[in-house]
Image (cartoon, rainbow over all chains, first blue to last red; front, side):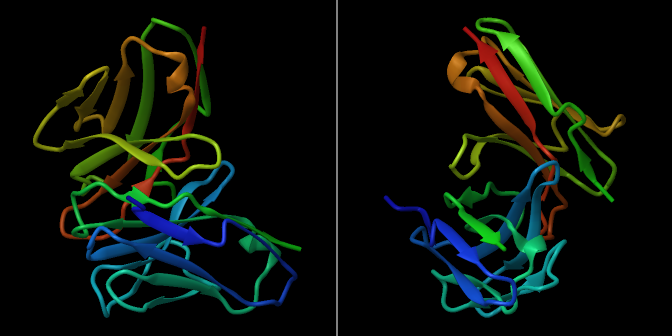
Length: 113
Length: 112
């Protein structure tokens, strides 16, 4: 019973490098989300996908791109990583976009040097 | 602009006593609220939610109270247990939208 799976769990990048964070859910959920967690800032929404084929910006989208590859998978890409993107990234999903709890993955800890 | 605020970064409570975690919001369009618990190195897990048509919702040891006029909600944990030690986040959303907005979290420590 995997739920929401994120890879990798840890990553260290140099400034300017690119990488993609992967997320997959096996609950047949329609909506998927990417959040970042920073000390004193809580969880902030980066991008979300209400359904397969759609993506929209959240509160802090700058410096990120996303792809909803299929119903199961939602990836987050950093094209040119910056130290300000050092954070813990969480992927989440739910069956429908609103008024329903989110299921979170275990997170990716990213450090940009 | 922090639309959902948790003004207490931390809280310590004795085992068996009541823990009260508070959350304030500024957006009057929010009509659904959730509480999440997070342990270190894990993702947040859902605890309890409440719709704006209610002012109270209970689930076992957890009760959430909503005061719409004050734009305030609180989570009560009774009795508190050491395993409740975690960071608690409140979140809010407006029906028909997709943006769950989270607070900054409160670290609860339950002392044995």
